[in-house]
Image 1 (cartoon, rainbow, N blue to C red):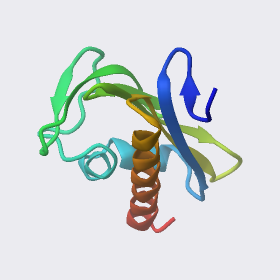
Image 2 (cartoon, rainbow, N blue to C red):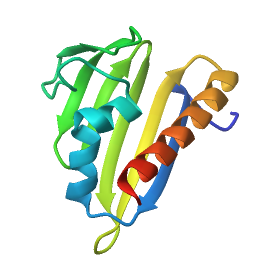
Image 3 (cartoon, rainbow, N blue to C red):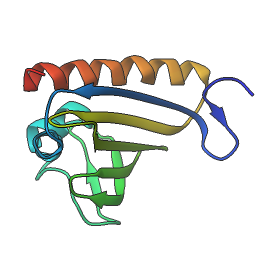
Length: 130
C-alpha cells in the first residue's frame, strides 16, 4: 500500500512539530478566533465546542465538530475530509502540535494538504513567536 493510504481512512496526511510553549498556552491560542482563523479559516463566532455543532468558514467550507477535548484535541469534518488538531506535552514548556487530515481523494490531494499544513504550522509559529 502506498505511503499515506490506509484501508479505513483513505489518503491521509499528518504534520507535527514540537514548539517551545506550554500546552495550555498553545491550546488557548489554537482555540482562539485568531488561532482558528489560521488553521481552519475565519468562522463567525469562533469554533463551536459541542459535538455535532456545524460551522462554516468565511470561504464557504462547512463541517461539523466530531469531538472537542479542551487542552487536548479537536476533531471535525472539513468538507468531505476529517481534520484533527492535537496538542501533547513533550517535557517542561514544550508541546507537540499535530495537524492530521484523512479521507483525502488522492495522492495529489495528500501532497497539496501536506504543503497546506506545513504553511499553517509556520503561521502558528510566527503568530506565537515560537
